[in-house]
Amino acid sequence: MPETTPSQTVGPYLSIGLPWPDGPDVVPAGEPAAIRIHGRVLDGAGNPVPDAMIETWQADADGRFDHPDDPRGAVANGFRGFGRCPTDPDGNYRIRTIMPGALPGPAGSTQAPHIDVSVLARGLLHRVVTRIYFEDNDNSRDPVLASVPEARRGTLIATKAGDGYRFDVRLQGEGETVFFDV
Image 1 (cartoon, rainbow, N blue to C red):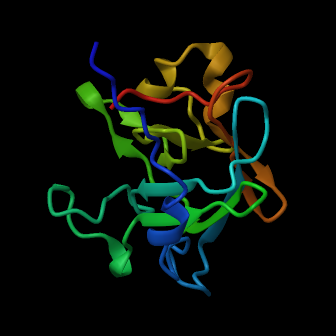
Image 2: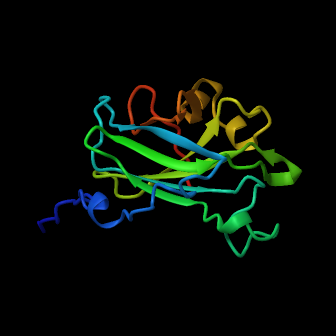
Image 3: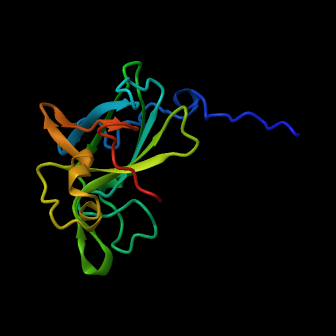
């Protein structure tokens, strides 16, 4: 019987090779509309994941993306819309950005302001993808959020926390963050 090759995880190299100095800063220091999103990445037992990578992609305040395929035109003031932050030894991350605008949705609907999030970490062969919605926005008519069972929607909502918004990512187990199949 032939022997199989042992499986291999991605490894702890994400936090070594992928960050860059202004990666967590989607907007520059001093941006008057800046908000801070911070939280922790936790494993299924509730332990911090010290070598995960959080990537964010979002629209500007007018709901436009920094992408040539966005038919609504260019973004304001060179807004790049992309952030990347490794977690620290306690699983913490932080992103400085702005509140995104509402987006057009399928069949003429409107998507509530949100930020798309990819999480990469050891033990994951592929990234997991989720969204951050904000508790102080009207999320009631968002078609994507409405597709999530009501009991699990709270895992997608960032809550106000003194100096910004808190959004923890639970990779599995009780309170697992909703991840989307993309």
